[in-house]
Length: 76
Image (cartoon, rainbow, N blue to C red; front, side):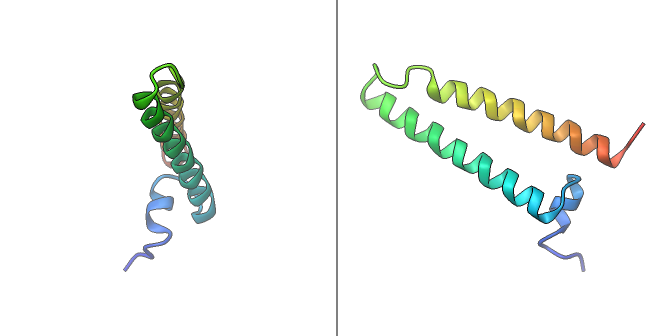
């Protein structure tokens, strides 16, 4: 049986701690984007581009991480 704490991080080419810090940082940014979107919904003059900017940054970060993980698993 594979270790549930290291199986997924190893699958994406990271150690447990690398994956933990990446996921926690990603989650904090998602939360901040969600809070910005919430307050923008109530006060449309606040945080006009914050949530979409954070979403774009997170998308780019995840795409780069996936590419890096694939490179680690299948070096050419």
